[in-house]
Length: 423
Length: 183
Image (spheres, rainbow over the protein chains, first blue to last red):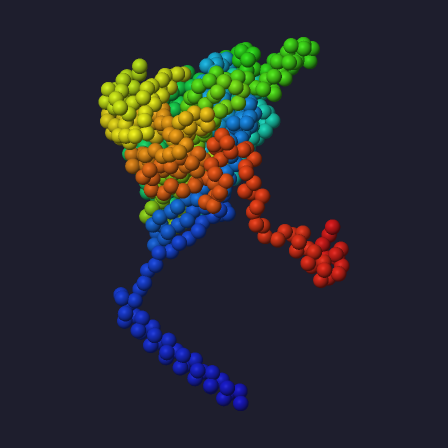
């Protein structure tokens, strides 16, 4: 009985194979006319390990090619600009930490520079040098973070461990300076929060002297790596003209060969007293932008070394007591000083009416603050020009025509941080 | 007067309203009508050469008859000069011409100004909210009459049933609450 059943099943299969075979033949015969292509919509994010935060992109695909991409921003919008209108200037400095949370020092610097421009405040020389050193340390930290994660996105895991080894050393230095590793709140209007101690100077000297060897180490992992080259060369190419038209900034713009760097164009801090080069690319692809960031780390190490050599002695905070807090020892013993301290905390310092824009070269590009003051202790309006947000405007243009796997590499090449993009 | 402002005053005598220099920044005030011609000249002609758009932003002055000020911050990379072009619009018709045709980077910036301040950009290819949700109904958050805590839109979200609610159901079925969930 069982054999009968088996033969019955076998016959059934045979019949089906005949039907399938004729179907296949029919398909093969009409191959040219029967293939139907359809546009394919794909939603990417907001939860995705490679989008560096909560970013959603709607992709219109033709096979694996990207025809159109529509970024959907705002998942990390916290209303920093609105909150800032209700805070005194000193209270806004910690808010700026949370913009680009992998390079908080650079955000602090951009904000306090704008307020100082409105106040026309002169910062002591030592403070300028300390600020420049810390800003460049932050640039190295940011680029190390970028290099590790970009390689991780592409699939080269080991680079991450090497870059984070050095990043940790520098974050330890931040911790000594201000007690925090990421949300630093170190810069103050008129100077910095704390002086740079001698043992930190020694550590920084040791770091910049050995850093060149570390960069060579990263390059041995990537420079001639065939996968890295295949994934970065000639991907997301943008010409200099288009890059300027889109308002790109930072390494993303310099990769296309435009030497737009505010440290050179409008020198601030101690940048006019040190020698450094601005690396520019030629092809405007991801590999060039990688090369620029590597080269910028070298230049940052050079700047730090020169600043440490030239570091003058003196105060680290302005002596203009309209903005700087009185000495703690005197606050405890002198009534007038206590009142002064109280007023600075509660009401803040008044900023003369007017408006100004001030741009700073942060690791990601031009971070600008546009502040309108009505003469009180709080800004009337504060606009943050975030490089990640403006760079995102060119995303559709740069991703068009590339493969879907390149999407994460293109996010990476902007060095995008959603905290800054959405504010 | 700054040479750029002088050139603009001669060429666009009807659109040009005035200029101001403070803290090393040049501000140029123009009328919203024919503003696009001024922007075209600022971008295309080499004596201005403002090829780089830094930002588009807006300020709200609720007491002023022309309530909103739209600020365009432009930079010239070859001449290394920055200018702020300011246009005033009224609350009744908060409309200016879009400059996306001149600087492509203005697309996101203008969308943000629309999202935050409610200023319309004529000729913008895709004028939608960008940072706030698409179905946001409370208005424009950066206007001065908008309260810091919002207007209650968030209180009416429809949530999926919470963990606590699901627990009561299971408790009812099992009859023994302690055995299933630790308190």
